[in-house]
Image (cartoon, rainbow, N blue to C red; front, side, top):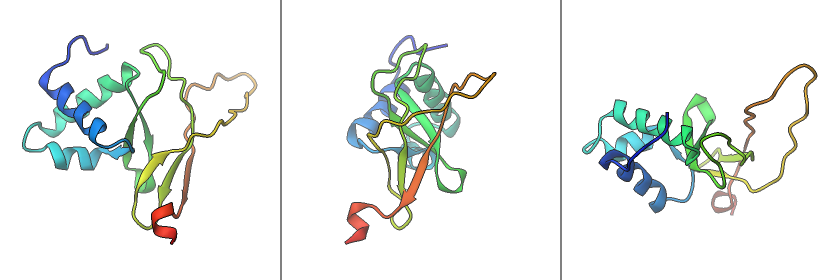
Length: 126
């Protein structure tokens, strides 16, 4: 089930991704929007945005869920498979624009593949 109209909660969440082009963890979204939306609404809208191909999610360090804007995805298919990089010093996470090949597995259909690369970002390395 996708988003039919842009409600106040949808607009507030999308504005967070316009302000920050990097990935945003669910915890940070809840902290920044807690005076405007409750936690349940935030998770519900994030799920719908992901279903619509507007956002994609992945698990970062310590199993925390992160969200980033999709590029070229739709309600029927997420096509922007790419790795994500997480800095172990500052915690910043972003999408890495690299083509990756998901191997074919006999007798199976791969629907989702998550690759998280961890290390030191350009700001922390210097």
